Length: 222
Image 1 (tube, rainbow, N blue to C red):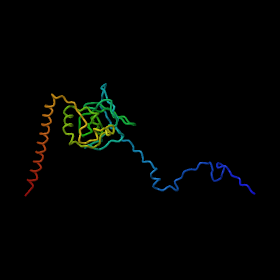
Image 2: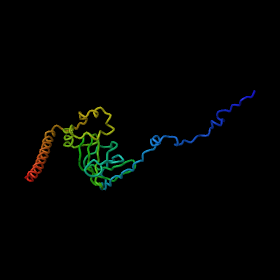
Image 3: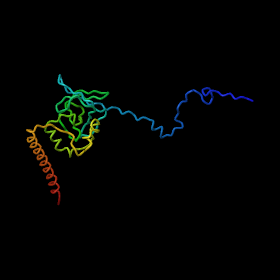
Image 4: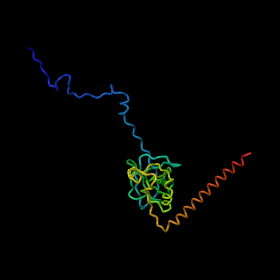
């Protein structure tokens, strides 16, 4: 009787130990597309900030690689990480990303109030640009703080809070203001009067503009 010789698996011709190269010949086209990585976007150059600051303190501000176009003119850079001090008007700043670093500019004024963000105009910037900062990382003056607090319900709710705050319970309820501004009681009455005066002036100007538009339309009616 003939005996059958059994080769070890490692030596069997059909079980070669030589590694097999992966190919995409039999892979469906849809799966091939899934494996392709999206192209990495080219970072937008930071603005040229050209203020001479001598020996004045400058706050380093980490911003996202890509800005947005949400204001009337110029790009808006968004603060990525908490700066070592709260940002405020007249403060000198230097913007930086993981791959870039700007010169020095100044936060001149607040241009937009939102529920969870404050946007500053930056002077000394070419081209013109703004900086959007989460409310907890901003030091508003008393009038700005009171304006934000008294108008919180009517301020734009978007963009959403910064990722560092979204998971916190106070930020999950849109009907509750999670921010508190410490304003001395002595100044509250004076600030209320200023706000009413500003509101009245604004309403009066809006009425005058409305009358002008209405008058023009009436004069053109036969």
